[in-house]
Amino acid sequence: MVENDSVTKVSCRRGRGYDIEEDSIDGAPLKNDPEYYDDDGRLKRTGNVWTTSSHIITAVVGSGVLSLAWAIAQMGWIAGPSVMVLFSIVTLYTSSFLADCYRTGDPMFGKRNYTFMDAVSTILGGQSVTFCGIVQYLNLFGSAVGYTIAASLSMMALKRSHCVHSSGEENSCHISSNPYMIGFGAMQIIFSQIPDFHNMWWLSIVAAIMSFTYSIIGLVLGVVKITETGTIKGSLTGISIEAVTEAQKVWGVFQALGNIAFAYSYSFVLLEIQDTIKSLPSEVKTMKKAAKLSIAVTTTFYLLCGCMGYAAFGDLAPGNLLAGFGYHKLFWLIDMANAAIVIHLVGAYQVYAQPLFAFVEKETAKRWPKIDKEFKISIPGLPPYNQNIFSLVWRTVFVIITTVISMLLPFFNDVLGVIGALGFWPLTVYFPVEMYILQKRIPKWSMTWISLQLMSAVCLIVSILAGLGSVVGVLLDLKRYKPFSSDY
Image 1: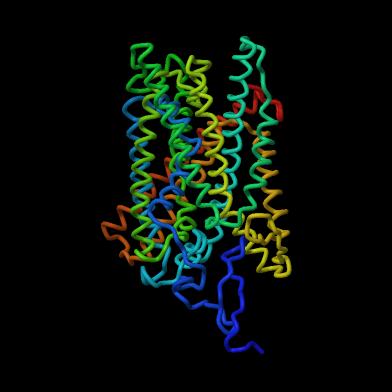
Image 2 (image 1 turned 30 degrees about the vertical axis):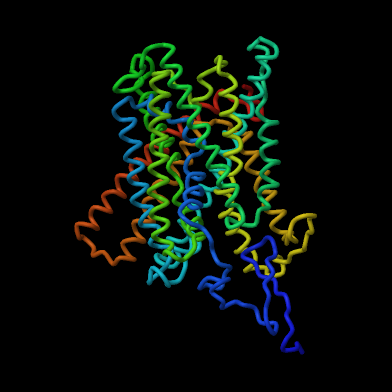
């Protein structure tokens, strides 16, 4: 029996992670206290426009920015930038639809959908849930593979730069990608133990800063190269048929569409990001503001980096923009950019992996409740940390698998294209549009309904073409590649 004037401590937490102790009178937890808890009984969310924007920028501005000069080179000065702007408009438009799906019913007090899958299950249901789950989690998995490849390329570039400037001989500095992929994987095993999105806001802010850093450096290097040569390269239609065959031109354009789609893929983690936002003002308003700000900023960077890269290199624009500058006299600036890419991708990997971690752990706990047991780890100078054995094993195995696949298929542009094509239509367009139609009760065959379905159909065709081009690229690469033996 607890005395009336006694004060006990209760441990409260959202997901797995650090204990947060709250005072409770008479042993009763303050679960209904709005000062500490939101309307769903979870610890009060604290996200705002700026933290949300940093999450989005971390998710959107990834390694895809480095392939945009190559993508524009496939299509030329007219089609290249136009396609990028169109992708940004579609992404912003459908992001607004998806933000409205965070709460079902009342936009302020309706039931929360914590994840993309929750929203599809609540609003669409049926086979849509299975289809969405397969596509979303394959895309998250593929993104982890793509980021591992991109990070290893940047780490290798740093090592090779040091080797060339130490030895003075470029040809003697051949480096295997395997140790760098393994090193990146080792870092991710550690960071993967971060409990959830709510505990990694600081990592997203660091990663967002890094994304701006290397984007600006890429832009500066492009301007420097244009200044040195005194010419703006490129053409209105991109790589000419004389330089490549007609088939190569077509597949190149399709693959470029996949690369641009990848650069704008983040919708499938939007609701997870929205779930970090505080309730006043409403989460929808904050998310829509953050989406407008983030996509405007990222599109500006994309256009500047892609166009400057194409202007600097023309039809010879490399798949990875920074690789095209070789061992320029500003090599230290290139090294700084590559270091920023690695730091950014550490955070971006987690932004994409955390929803997959959470899904598997949630479903496993439902089937086998005993597996959800935790033990407490005490780290000097930090609050006690709760570690779940299953989470430790599962997250470690996930990182190992993505690392091994990256070592088997280290094809930067092709892998990005496949991932972008796989996820763009279903996750960025189809599901947000269908949920919006049901949420807003838009009549079938009305002008709004027809317009939305037409947009969805066009995006489906683009995704199919992008997927074909990227798969062909992977098959061509496999013909001249031996597994686990890629050198740089």
